Length: 313
Image (cartoon, rainbow, N blue to C red; front, side):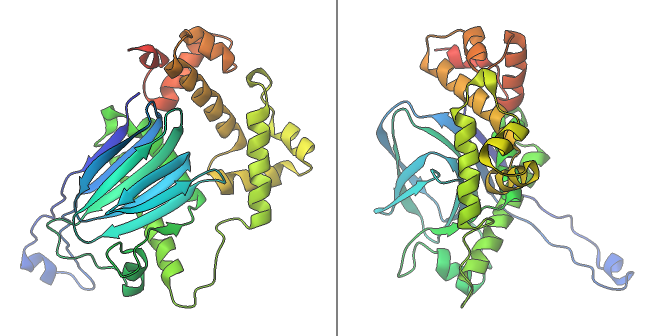
């Protein structure tokens, strides 16, 4: 299994002659973009329980955690994040270089996307004062700000975790756009939360609807792979209309019921292959596929590499 990463190279605008600017009426702005934006998409099964130490430059980081628990410390302060109740977003600003210690737990699956803007060589980052205070780790009250991911943010993360996050496309325009869009979503949401007297918001769904979405997810996961429920079956068993079921689920998890069902089956098969002992055909059958070729095609499309890659040592 290979983690997905992408880094955007610096962008420099072409110098425009003053004569060209003088020949137009209205607003004419030419800006120079000099940024180092790193996108790291991770969908993995942790094999060992250990702690790893990393030195970090000054940076602004957005995280969207889709599944699993994350434990780490920044400059000696411990943080723990969990997606047990659905995807969560976190954001932090480190104005000076620091130390991160990441703790992994054997047997745990983690799906997350990090988008990081390096501040080295950049003369400050222009953030509203309230937002800067809200997310700065070097402030008097250090912490990691939380933001509620929208369906659009979830779709961006899903793109980065599937075909657009493979090594073959690590410099693709699509990857850069999805990473920048996710970054923008996090900043906008966190900025709204940081405003004085801003109303508390539990996210895109209220508590009751989020609980209903979780029940849909649990029901899907409890079903046998060869008897995957349709949206109509789920709606009938859970006492809601099909449109309500689809709306709640997509708002909570950023994908349709059928997309989630297919993703769960493929993720379960990949975990079995990584644990060893099964052939590609056996893992595909357990995931509900009747032929190894159909399974391999679906697997390749979802993860960007064939299932046989998970059996190599």
